Amino acid sequence: MVRNNKSAFSLVELSIVIIILGLLVASVTVGKDLIQAAQLRGLISQIHGFETQTSTFKLKYNALPGDIKNADKRGLGTNNGDGDGVIEDATAGGDPDKADYEIVYFWQHLNLAGFADGAYDGDDTNGALGETFPKAKHGGGIVVYGVDGVNYYHIGIADSTTGTPSTLVFDDTLVPEDAFSIDNKLDDGFPLKGKVVARAECATNPTTFTCANTAITTTSGGASTTAGTACVLQAGGSQDANLDEYDFETTTIKCQLRMQMNN
Image (cartoon, helix red, strand yellow):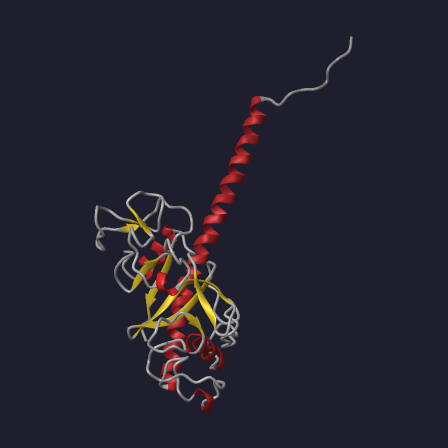
């Protein structure tokens, strides 16, 4: 008689395998959450670092980086700003939509002063993240610009389009929950009010400054009354800055952030 020496897994063995697989899946999920949390903490620290660097620069040079009029006489290269306290592109008074003039000099001056965490070229024909603009810790990049006399950090740009000068490209880089975490840490946690406000790509011309400068609404884009579809969830039939909130059910990248500079 031929004996069959093959044996199947017992229930105990199968249970052990299932438990091990479950632990592996859980560890991967926890690991991804830890990485994401570290990136957000890094981004918040990065913004705090920019504020400190800019304050230190202003204390030393009595001007903002990028805007300083006599940079060429202070060992900061040959690119001078106009000294009006607003970070602008070359079309002063117009939309700051070009990657040129003070918008790129800002990071170059911080670099040449020894304050920046990267070497930035101030090149108005480049506009690449990591070369002309800093990369954000979570992805995408960061730009500084002034609107109506107020300077802002804008979290959410991509490499600029080529040209002379190159053109800024605004880009959603955050899921709403992450945008809320940053807003809540730096400001009030509401997307439509305070020093930190949400921005998002519009239905038309989604990557332009005109879009990035437009407040989020259900018509302009970025907000919806249906959960899980946009950066901002509109609570009622009309917009309410005290009630509308980041849409935590949206798990895809839908948000940018604009933060008022303290300097």
